Image (cartoon, rainbow, N blue to C red):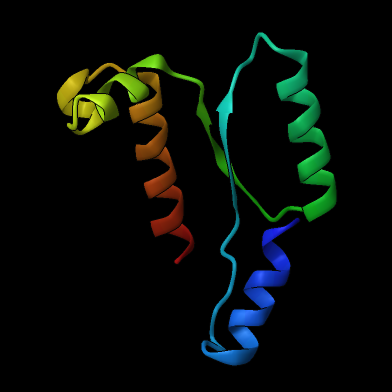
Length: 95
């Protein structure tokens, strides 16, 4: 919610066409109740303003970044990398 005032300020001052396409939930862990609580609170607060794609907590994403290479190059079976593919599909389908 802290970013919303900044988006409004930018929209009013320099970019009137700026819109938030949606919120992307990252570092999600199915095993943690806290992750589920955060998702519930965010989806309730933003009323459908979140992407259905969720990026899981995945050590392979962090390792790829630290090695300076794309996630698929580092490990093509990374769940996090495939989650970003799903996000890309979702964005392309929704325009």
